[in-house]
Length: 107
Image (cartoon, rainbow, N blue to C red; front, side, top):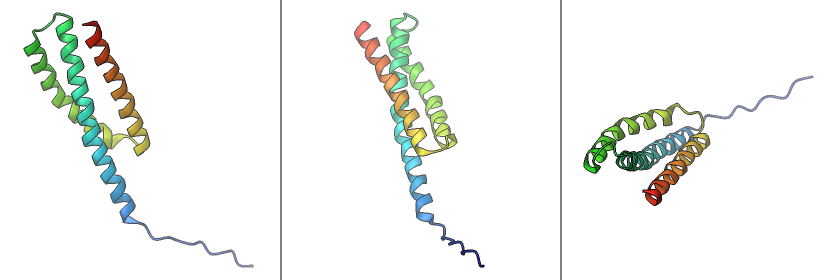
């Protein structure tokens, strides 16, 4: 008796290209959103804590934002799976937006 032959499908390069495009878009857009929220939260926290004047707090948070954005871009290509990356970015954005709202209402 002969065993049934396995069907071998050709690789589909457009799937890889689409996943890569989605990852790049998520890294750029999500990283930008998280960096903006992170800079806003840090600047508000520094001012409310009385550690820096508002102008200096914004300057410091903006400079640290470049480091944060670079780290988020690297993280986006380190994580396995687009769904996991989107979930992590969404959770971080929700946390930062909540912190920002808390700092605005209590400050």
